[in-house]
Length: 69
Image 1 (cartoon, rainbow, N blue to C red):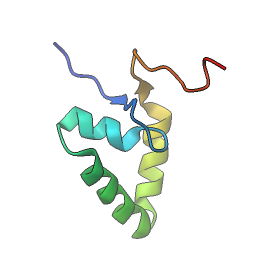
Image 2: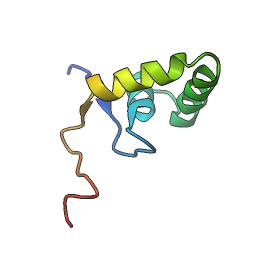
Image 3: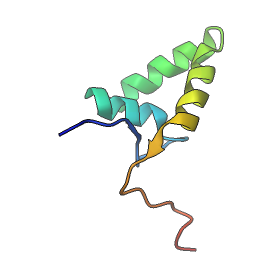
């Protein structure tokens, strides 16, 4: 079975850090902390997160909280 990088359903913002953590089998909190450090040290994390939010797809089983309203 082929692994594919998706945004996480358990989202804090756009699900990029959670998706990366699921793909590599890491703890989501650890990935979010690494992203925060990168974001505060020159803004590299912000740019990478924005690219991830634009390029990564939602999981096929994702249901938005706004769909049932």
